[in-house]
Structures are given as structure tokens and as C-alpha cells.
Length: 197
Image (cartoon, rainbow, N blue to C red; front, side):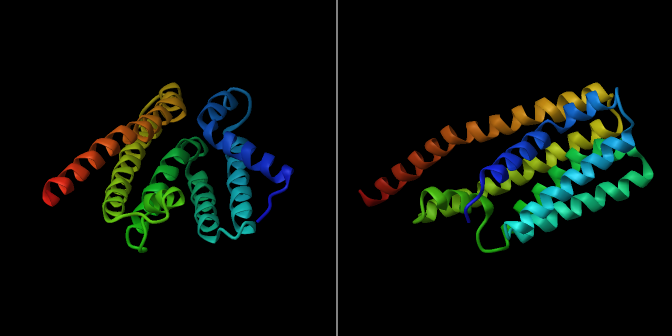
């Protein structure tokens, strides 16, 4: 599918808004009402859902639509709480998606790995399955911390964790996995060589 330049720009803008969400909420609450910010957030998620469906990514569209429904329902209880719950919902959704992929025949990490190495060996399949579980554990832990910040922390701490610290942790896990993979793969190859000797 060929994407036009406006569609690519819109996709980039939506991704940046999603990443900057906690910071936008923090500064937005000082200028406009929580109800307006929440409504904008819901519209934002609905736009993402529509874009996914348009791109025939129906699973992602369903997930984004579900997030919009959850935010809307939470808004009836408290605008502020609903705004703070967005990172929790995202972490829970990612944990669920990664977990379900373990039972779909090909875990998400394996799909990513096969984009670079289509003929993935047995070690690669096993490793990507374990790595998928690591990411599930991370998203659960991240979601629990986000939940704590949403319920008990100040707006400043909530913004700091969800708008900076969580991204740093994701980067550390993403980058730190590479040397770990190299070490484990080298040990695996060494073990094979010993058995063949």
C-alpha cells in the first residue's frame, strides 16, 4: 500500500502526540479544563482507530477503538483520573497483545525478527518467544507503576514517570537486549560446536 505524503505526516504527528501525551496533559491542565483535554484525547484515539482500519489493520483498529471506549467510560467517573489512566491502558493493551501473540502461532518479537531474518532457526524461534515474555513482564510492571502514579502520585511525578522515565526504561530494555542476545547466541553456538566435536 502506497502512502501519500499528507498521510505520512499525519501518522508522524499522531505518533509524536501519543509519545508527548503526559507532557501535553501536564501543561494543558494549567490552561484548559480536564474535560476538553479528555475529549481531545478520545478524538485522537478514534482518529488512530480509523487510520488503522483504513490501512486494513483491523486488530490494531479494534484495540484503539477499545481504548477510546475505556477512556470515555472512565471520564464519567473523573476527567482527571481518566486522563491519568491513559498510560495504564496503553501498557495493559500492549501486555495483552504480546501475550495473545504467544498463542497465535508466532509471537510478535518473532514476527519482527523474521522481517530481518526470514529463515529463523530453532534457537531464534525459542529466543524470540522468551523475549516476548520479557516484554510482557515489562509492560505489566510499567502498567502497575503507571497505575500507582495515576492514583497516588502528584501530577508532576505522574508526568515525569509516564512522560520520561518509562521511555528511558523502554530504551534501556530495547538497546540492552542486543548485547545479551549476542552473548546467549555465542554460548549456544559454542555448545553446538562442543557437541559436534
